Length: 253
Image (cartoon, rainbow, N blue to C red; front, top):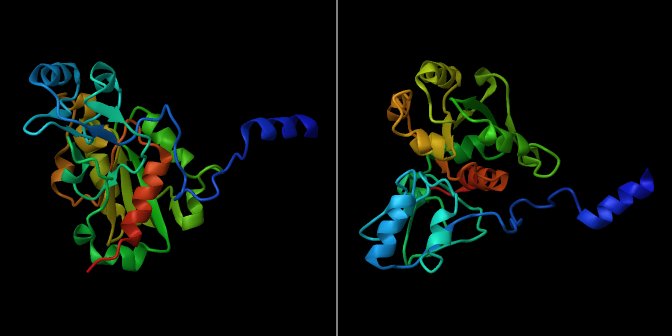
């Protein structure tokens, strides 16, 4: 048995990430896209094939809050769209998730938008309650992976808890269906103040592929301040960990 374990270790390498902040995700992971200006015909083709209207005009850009990261646009127009392996896909502003052609810069948080109490209270310990608001289990599975031995989010004092009464904020997955709208609000109200709100994945950020569905009720989001948007479908665990760390460590003025 020991010999077999050593063979696996030799073949696969370490099964844990020594420092998630320095880790890189290898291909075929699709991270932050880089865009280049293209002709009108190619752009029209990209717009037509995008199922969530994530591709926008004037100028050519992609809204990562809607993007499913399916990669179809990059396959159709490789000279115009290229997905990198940059997993840093979190922003504290909705506009911060819009990638524009010719402006290939990393996605980052805006320090001026971080509430002052976040760093002062949650910088060393953060407990979160996850709400699956009609999620598809893919996003939930990735969040669950954040606490496993590979990513070990708990080393930073960040953990998920079972009760909103024990939480410092909520992480919403899913597009928020009518059946989950009230439950989401009740859970949010049960979290003691001050509290943070995180939208994890395209479904939570924009409704994703379900955005036009009559079965959704996203009015709750009109009543709260969202502190972090994590793009992806689903986002990588490192995207979430890095986004949360950036949020609670960002120096405010």
